[in-house]
Structures are given as structure tokens and as C-alpha cells.
Image 1 (tube, protein in one colour):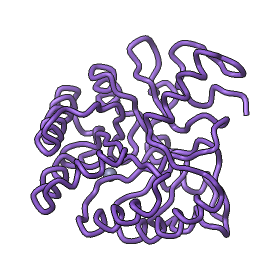
Image 2 (image 1 turned 180 degrees about the horizontal axis):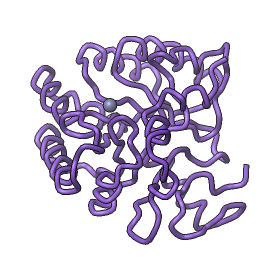
Image 3 (image 1 turned 135 degrees about the vertical axis):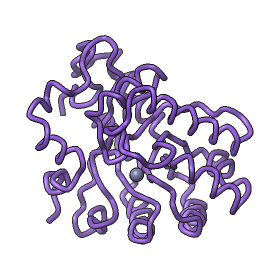
Length: 258
Ligand SMILES: [Zn+2]
């Protein structure tokens, strides 16, 4: 059985942890630290499915068709800036269609470069370029709240500081639903946990998995929500503080009693 631990072994973050002896102290702390999110509230029986990169138009179109069959499912897309522009030119209106159906769009770099090799100025500039591309394809400025670092590099100081400067939530994940881990969310493994943020990419394996995951979620009565919904519920919970640690400066997740 594929566990979260196994997945973390594969992740960029784990590789970074091995590479940096001061890994713990390199994590976001202090007053200028942006909120970091790995998972939503465990009190809500839902998940947030997320799709990174958005490299393949035909798979995005497959996903769009699939979503039309499951009106309770909301997703968050994390396209690169390059893909915002190229997919729009191949299929005019595609981003507006996702948005109009209640799905959300977050930042995932312009050229898919690991923020670990970029200065703060470069990452800020990268975000601004990405956002310009977003405004261009949408025709207006949608609210952008979530930023996912390339390679899961959440310890990149440049990325952390850029999130703080631009008011973004540094967004990671608590479960993976595709790629090498295809099948991890199906009936056999049944690993759905309340508030999971599930990582997919727009690639063939992941869309195949998605095809099985949507009916499974429906059968289980588990909706998928946008990251905004998941995050707002976390904020509400923090305010109420019932069963939760409201310590300032701590990441928003792992603060509630299970
Ligand atoms: Zn990516």
C-alpha cells in the first residue's frame, strides 16, 4: 500500500530536507512569513483536488467534460504562465470556462523553474508576469490567493518572501492522486481523509485516475472544494479556536486536534 510517507520520499521537499541540514530552521517563521497550507480542516468531509502545470490541452478538455458530469466537484488549477497563454490561443475561452464553473486558478511559476535557483526579485517578477498572463487570458483580474512552488520547494526563501510580499498562501498538498501514484485514491486503497489537498498534474495518468476518482468521491458523498473554500474554513476554525492552536505565525495546518 502506498502511504503518505512513501510519497514524501519521492517529493522535492524531502530531497531538499536531505540536502539542507538546517531544513527545520529554513521553514517559514516570524512575522513576515506567509501562511502555508498542507491540508484543510479535518472537521469537514471534503477534499480539494488540484491540477498543476496544465501542459496538455486535450487532457484539459477531457477534464472539463468530466467536470460537467459532476457538478459537486470543484478543482483548483495551477497552470504556468506559458500554459495560460498557449492553451488560451489553442482554445479561446478555456480559462474563463473553468472559472465560470466555479473552479479556481493559482500561481505555479511562469516557466516552471524551481524558485530555489531564483532571487527574490526574480520570483516576484515571475509572479507578476504570470499574473499579467492571467489577466490577459481572463479579460479581468481574478483573485489569486494560492501559490504552489515548482518542485514542491516550500523552503525556498525567495518563494516564501514573494508569497509574503504578494499576499499569497504558500500551498502544498497532503495526498497525491496521479503519476507514479496513480490509483492511490481509488476504492482499493480508500485513503481519503477529511480536508486532504490532493496533487494531480494535467497528464495522462492523472486524468485516467481522475476518471475513477470522480465517481468514487460521489459514491462516498465526498465533494471536492476549491482551495479558497478549504482555506476560508480553516480561517474560521482558527478564529473560533475550538480544538485548535491559534498560535500566531504557525502554519495553518497541523494546528487542530484530530
Ligand atoms: Zn509543476
